[in-house]
Length: 345
Image (cartoon, rainbow, N blue to C red; front, side, top):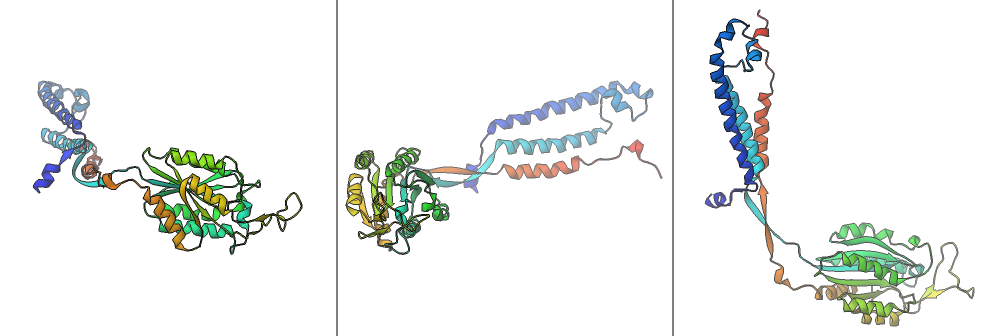
């Protein structure tokens, strides 16, 4: 009990000055009552029920007036105390601090529809991402789908369920123009990470088959690595590869009129991971590949020195007083018939 009393305080104590308004109201009641005695002679020239309007006074008795004053004063007291914000218990919560962010760059180009892994590379990549979300603990994740252009599918968030719900959206049907431009996706990833706390640990994960050719890609990944953003790569597909299915035709045809063949470009993906300061992992469609990537991302996490930094959140109790005041107000608004208007039986 002593601990509770020591913790009790008002969050806005300045409101307590409003209680002083009760004093001038009491003085006014005393003044008008004395004034009514001086005007006693006026009662000889007007009906009793008209005198309150003539004198500007209440027709209620002194006892009734002071009882009303007590009722309204109690309501005022409760409302002022509620506005002052009484609180007497609290909860210690951990402060928000910079954490670990991972932006997944998900390849949705037409080559991801290749069936060298069953049923398709794209479906397998979705399964890998689903495994990553299932195993993730404490890492904020965002997703960008890319082909010829990049789409932000999910911003960086702690809500893994929201990302699971948009997994079916990751489809090559989003692609209007053929091609795969990872540079655009990297630019969008940089924009997402720029909005995170300054001291956050940021990483990228590229899920792709490596079927693209961009000359400045290695240099861009090195720039990200120098800024503290590591890049990991998860390869989807086989080195043998297969022909790329078309949207309105059986196969996508090259300039020579032959079907385009796509294979997992492991040398390129390994060089990308090396330039980005991360690791390359070929998808084995088990949990070990995503577990390894998450372990590498968490290895960059901040030390736990600030893990116990907390702030005190007080539990406000004003609603108790406001509720009691509301109950006291109900009978005060009850209408009563003036005595002179009551029809005598």
